[in-house]
Length: 124
Image (tube, rainbow, N blue to C red; front, side, top):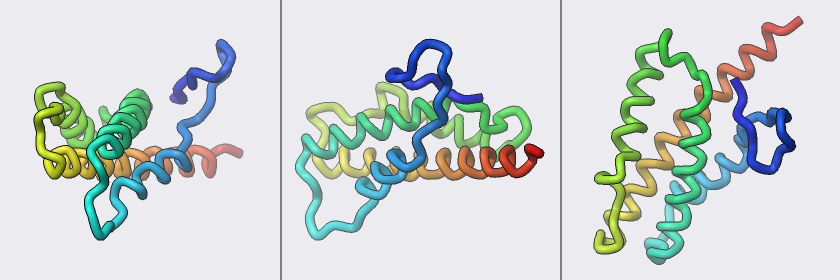
């Protein structure tokens, strides 16, 4: 199952952009000498949440694979509004939340990539 990208014309299906997701995840998980400023943390978190939301719409084997089912449950818990850092949260708390979303997004992207490679290899 593929998602429809906002920029695509009606009816046109585009696959998940794993390259863009990978760049965002890599930036969020990069080892730095100092923590990024809060506006950058918040912007990256919003982007990661968008990527994770997009991957949550894909059929990644929720019904067949208990590990994937656990990932979905973890994602829904993580994305609950009550768990997201508020403006009053510390920069470190927001940074750790961003990194947690990035790690989970990376796992979803990996499952998506594997399933699509299997599907393309199975096609004659």
